[in-house]
Length: 255
Image (cartoon, rainbow, N blue to C red; front, side, top):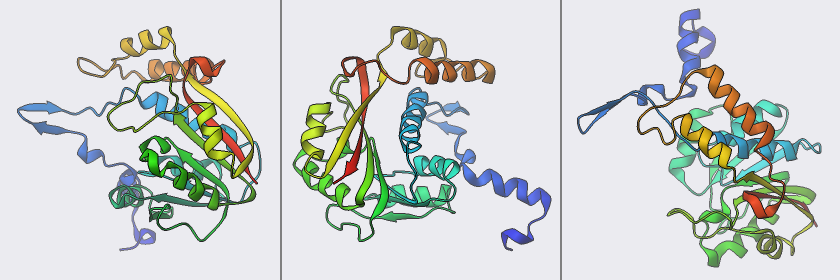
């Protein structure tokens, strides 16, 4: 049965398969949970919004997201730029399998751009929270591959954790604007830096009131959670200076 043959009730079920909600409830080690909670989620969406904000500064017809993971950014990009040609790239076949399952209408490829550079050139390349996962000795090669994916005068929008923020077990290193400039300057001109995700005592308190890491409770009233996210977007997404940010974006033009 094809999608065109589905009846109204079947369409309702079909449209719910954009998220694996059957995997939310769990009974493991004698403990039951029916809540999926990620305390960093609002900051994750904020990072996506920063990239989308930068993309709106100019017109483009094609975009490649390098290090796309499970494809969440490309889903948001497709909603905002429905006429743009989009491609998601990641070395992880498992991540690409999930991206394809959650976004069957979008195009994803499992490719290591260092060892197998892209043949196509795009108007825009994005690289979101990826550089910190690259072994330091391979970072220069990775930046060269990023540049090779962008047409002349095309744009790169890259985000990374700042050195203001401590390393975690998944990251090799964090970056500041000086380090990023040295890496990108051989290929890109007009490099601008956008500090975001500022350290804020108030947001830390509010996050705890919202449930923190979710160990004891999670606040789910959508009026309250929507207020919380709007406040973050309006007042605590962008930082006033690099000195107070936890993440930073580099917006560059290909030489």
